[in-house]
Length: 314
Image 1 (cartoon, rainbow, N blue to C red):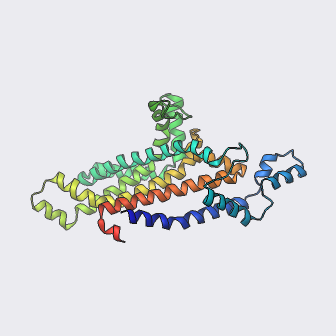
Image 2 (image 1 turned 180 degrees about the vertical axis):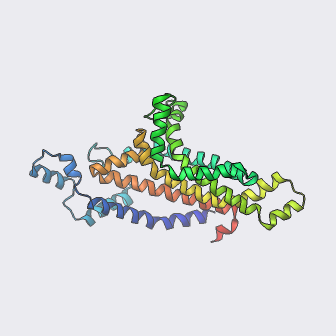
Image 3 (image 1 turned 180 degrees about the horizontal axis):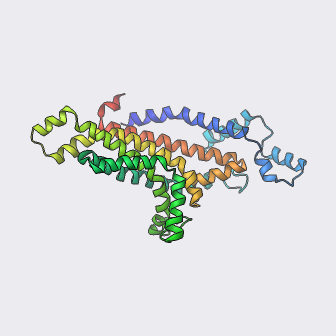
């Protein structure tokens, strides 16, 4: 198992380098730069040039990226934010819990409700199966930001059941933390929940129709034991893959959710950094997001290996 994890980590290093280089180059192609954003529209050309030189923006692009990569690889530094003067690591550490809370709760809610609906509808069928189909269509059709705005208008502004904006840290109040995240999590979970339910139902129906399940039934084994010990274990592998995609998609949609609900996370931070051409912040958030994707894939590989030991030797 340890060899499997180490092999996946080593294979992920080139991905980190490629994503880092591509995001650095793409940001350099956007009109404007950090010096222009810092100087403002009223700065003279001489003031702008002095600021540009002090930030090293007069250097070739390959030199700028090489300097950034050297600091990252050999010193573990993500740079300094030119606007606040704080280290990028410190800024990201303050924002990280918000985004992780949002993404993890979204994934857990999508998994719990989606798998439950999918399994029950596969076993019982009928109206519940049609409801899962309807939920899938609705989930695909409604974008997360629109659901967030509708929930915000209805449950926050009209009924005043939940706060419309803001975030409460769990160290301050555990209930306040959960209360501030209910609406964003629901808005992000509707579509993934439908996808997980649909995939769980199709996988469970496929497994229940297999020959070995009919053999187990003919042997007199109880229905609940067949369902939970044999069918669900074999049907869960495709659902795990979908849950990995749910985590990654929730990570990207936090950009919308954090801006709609004014949450101080990495998603809202990268929007602000992009408008200000704050390359160290953009690179830091991109690196964190890429590491999350790699971590999720490693966790999925471990789960696959636990379910199917043959995976460990691939």
